[in-house]
Length: 105
Length: 429
Image 1 (cartoon, rainbow over the protein chains, first blue to last red):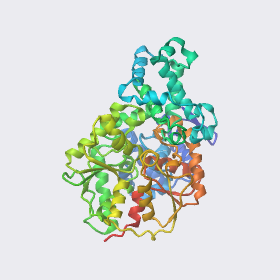
Image 2: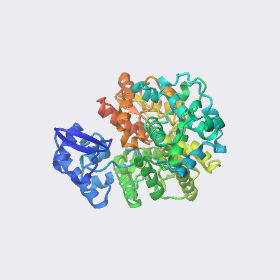
Image 3: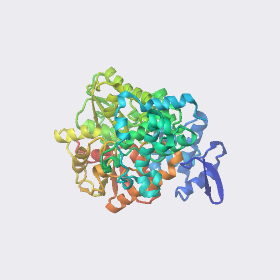
Image 4: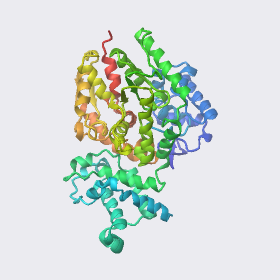
């Protein structure tokens, strides 16, 4: 376990910087995590992605397929990659407060 | 507390007759130290414990303690090493947390000791004791339980493939382009890294475009398509074997003549080169990597490429398992040089290239994230010195590590798979 300090706030995270306890996540957490990834401001499109990932996680306990993400937000794949430069997993899922997905991500 | 039972199962790994290579390699290291500077961990941290020979010493100490008379009697005096909680901690840290199994040390070893082979034996011992880092073990377990390491449900996979097919048809304005799924009797069964359908499906459509241009008869399977093999990383041969068997059996069931392994370094190594050893039998089917297949297409004129479309400067990261350990150096360069006009090698390159830093399962183990990015600095420097705008690599694991390195060290490059650059240069009939 590690801790991550952003803007004077400390979070318990895993080595990859994913929240250890996803239940403490809130909008402010998302903003702080996004900032630490170099995303200066969360736009409505960012929020659409974050909300979708979050609700999928709360229902199913895992990250959604990028297919479902595109379908439900109406965004194109390319747009999602542009919104989160680290990709849907290390980028978007981390900002949405999920645990790190398993595998080569 | 390490139980007697744990100790015994770990020790039995060291005296497996089928692995007689162990003794030779454990007894050959002359501690010349040439391996030190070949290792990314030592180069970055400059700590003696990271020297590859130190990992050999730990393994030979364990062997000596439990399998030689002098080790049993004289213990520490002959460098014998007891399995206890401290040793086990050290083993986890050295064999999982500070070795990417890249094999660069073997190349620099004055006598060719297969150090990553010994490290992997260490991992096998830890696996036998149930001490594999949980993040890594859970990925392997998911593959055994669900058929793929990311536990993707079958309908989600199918849905993604259909979506990619529609997108591809739109892009090419051609409804005859397909991504065939579960079609028996084709020539090729193609495999994927689950991160492609889950998060990065554009490499699937890139490969489909190449197959279409080559007029290939191929299919995907919605059940067993996972080319990764986390059993290999865990040192769990039983699981590793099962994963290879799943693909072999699926190829047989689908009645294809060739099993083509998607762009994945360790998966190719496991399925193609390690698999026959684990299964104690030759591959039942012609198994080859996507790189070799694409090379074949270009050579036989089955696909035509126009490499002058793109004017960006490209460089190539050699995945350790495909190039240094798999020997696909020329095949890879043949494909790349036919696909891009402006190409520059990084230094060192080919079989002396450095690992991306995320190999050996390190990408999946959060506890070593900091170390992984720290050693990635070497790769960042290599990339920066080429002045390239795009880094090509035929391994999705490397792609992810390079993406993180790109972000961390602000390199401002793009990372592409080989299928993506080939698809980009395709001349469609």
